[in-house]
Image (cartoon, rainbow, N blue to C red; front, side):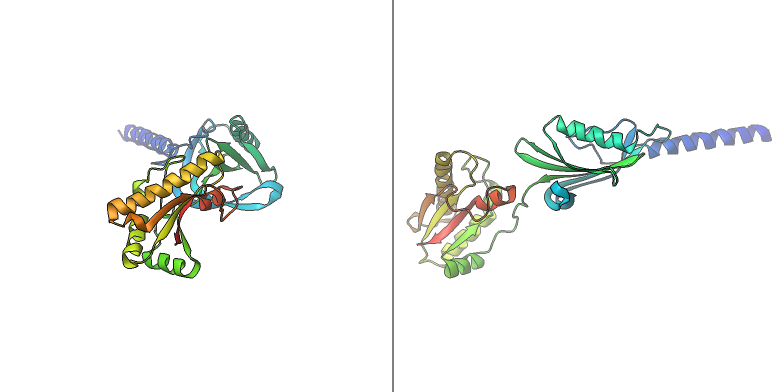
Length: 278
């Protein structure tokens, strides 16, 4: 009887150990592969972070560090227990080749430190990928580059100070879909602050001026920028009771940039609506 109990206990230990081993090789709860990359065979996700806006210091061209901001993913993969190690170089080369097939460019690769940086331009997005590989694990840091959306609208008081000191104020809290002039609902806070400014300063008359980046044709952007300015003026008049006679709408396309249109950050700064004191 004692021997039988010993055998049963031993079997239970084996089953428990097997269950723990299986559990350890499961993906971290809530994690998933990035849409651009499938995982290496026999690996599971051991670490995972998905931040809507964050930054990462990549090693770019000419070995220069560059900080990229945007939607950041961090995914750590570990090899399943008992699986054969593919080798760190095979991991890096697989990821490089997968991204190169869809237009990615390897801008940095270091065999000594086992790290690579790949940049992908696809569907209007610029995605930076860093892979750090080891024999039995690898880590991906991925940032889809973008400028943080301004979620706090400038107050009417701040707008008034800018107009008084410089004669104009840039409004960055008004949003449109690309190529369209319909104001998106998340613009309500900024437009309400413009209305408050015009209500508080009853004698103030303004030009509402639309600005774009240089994507697309100049003629299209001239019309688009004017249409957007007119949409803002209509919203101020229709929703907030501001007299239409106090606002004249114009569009200047990309004629008055405040930053370089050669970068995504610069283009985001150039897409704006300004109030100019008449």
